Image 1 (cartoon, protein in one colour):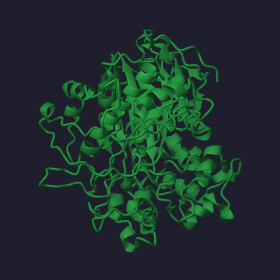
Image 2 (cartoon, helix red, strand yellow; image 1 turned 120 degrees about the vertical axis):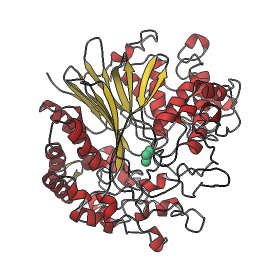
Image 3 (cartoon, helix red, strand yellow; image 1 turned 180 degrees about the vertical axis):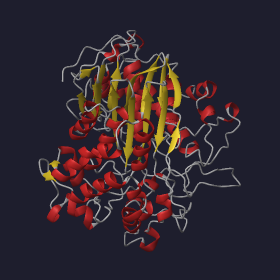
Image 4 (cartoon, helix red, strand yellow; image 1 turned 30 degrees about the horizontal axis):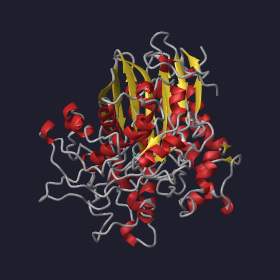
Length: 596
Ligand code: GLY
């Protein structure tokens, strides 16, 4: 794909000069899989709006990227409505069932082993994706739910060609496609993993989607599919016995409700960002990182802060470590436990935290800060043990001819979720409840509210961060990423690339990313894939090593060999009204424009 020369940073609108050919006034869809992108484009071409297209994409992803998201999971759909200028988030995060308890992953005070707990029914949260999509369609869509299911039903019934990424995920499944026979039967027929190029037909899934099309979401949340879900989540790994069985009942499914939220709004160098509030940590943590670095002249090569320079990479790393220290302590589902949002984003608080960043060396492992002076609601909890987080999930973006925009991240948590396919119904169940603290942090004596402890009806803390960038009150770009806790860093990297480094959206996506997800953390950095450019040089890596950073291996070697996230984006040029798309070659990212 041809790259333009980097734009000059003072050309504030250079992100619109996308190198992608898909430019249209009539809508663009950007998705991690071409068949799902085609499903969305089909809705737009048939006169549907961005919400209709998003519904079709999400259902199609359940078929062609089943390891990442689907009706057995949850997600966050950010919607900008051109007519009113409002932005909402449909929060369809999975919820803990009524019988969940804070100690359920540590019944004897000791955390269950993650590989066992996360592949047992106990990990399955009440799924929200279908209710979320249906709610969005009812509020803002123009098509019927059944119409948006048609492309997914066709893909499941007629089949599709397995791509490299699905084939790799089957082989590198950490056992999850092999644990339960219904999952193995789909992805390892006769014990042989599906390979790239194989044809995959999913008849059970097609029938499930047809039933939902005919009967509506109640077919899933009540009735036969609901009963099958309840039975399936009683599966448990032998080692855990009945302690590993799911606690969801029919009433949990029947009573599942989405939340409609206002996005979290932040500013960075004159740009406005709308991003994901709690129960995700994604938006708060990303806005904290940006706030910590606003005083740093990122992007100014003459001061040593160009893309990939040691100064830039060091400052990014330290901001990530500080923000992740706060995340581990302060952020959870604030419908259940208050999160001191105002304090965590207060310029005074961020200034004291930013002052901890020294340019001459790596700081000692930072503790979470105390935003109480800036936010009287803050009650300082003790740190909790961070749960393991997977690198999966999926993100897509859509803009339609009227200027409505959707930025949607959805998941079943780990790659392959719990590994449990609902027998006879062909979809995987999530393991989202393992995003909660395994060992409860609540401690009344210490004033620890247990921000991310399990409790009935609560949503586990997420990292998902569907984001939109606004200029003069109108969205100019929308993006997001999969990748567990690295989601936050992928969205952060792309934001810096756009605003500080003056890249086009496609360049911002292709550029190698840097990630640290713990205060004590080691750097993980990209560079293994040939398309990632400009590279992060070995000299820059050596400079980071000299500053005391770990994770890059031996001096003089290239330690940037990771792959982080998969960013899909749309861009709207306010000057021309044209829509651009940009997609990530880290998966089969695809942009489709609607032809006028
Ligand atoms: N399970 C991934 C996330 O919510 O961030």
